[in-house]
Length: 255
Image 1 (cartoon, rainbow, N blue to C red):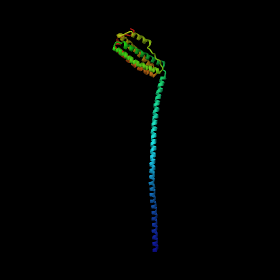
Image 2: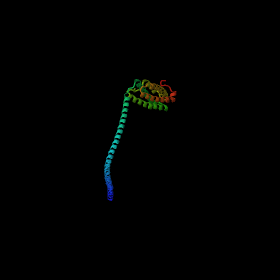
Image 3: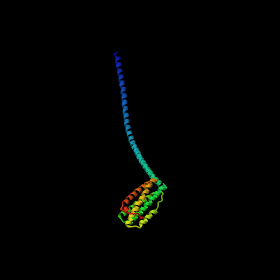
Image 4: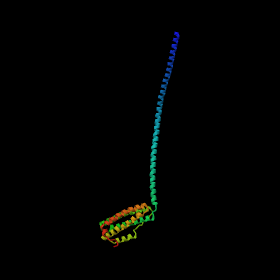
């Protein structure tokens, strides 16, 4: 009985030892495989690191090229957009200019431009006479203002008429020629009085009235704007002429 108990105890101890032995093998296997895996992982990170390093370089280069390409593409797009916008604006401007140049005026608007040109020429000629025949400094100064302002206005109306296909007169009409002929025979104080009364006051009054009426009749907006600009200049001339002593005490060229 004692031997049986001893045998059973040995068997139990052997079984326990076998279990611990099996557990130890499994543990060793697990631990052994772990370093292997760790080693592999360690090796792989090195390889991965190398791959990542190479890949990073490649990706950096690729990204850089893409960025540069995008930047160049963006600049090209902006340049193309700006060029297109500038070209479009230029084309639009040329189209507008061409349209304005090709647009014919109505007979009424064309007549307005002709009347303005006629008045400008008459005032320039009268101003030249005031410079050469005038006695007072005031009359000479007024004559110079007529030359400067009406020469500029005449150049402007010529430019508009040429662009709109209107043929302007090249000389004053019969009425202004007759007035100039009478003034040509005068000199000194007599000329000053007649010039300021006739060319300075009466003529500017007549022209101003025509311009006021033309502003209401003009159909073309450019013509109307030009009429209004000219009216403002003539109104200032009329006011200056009416305030001069020579005009207040003078007589007309026909008297």
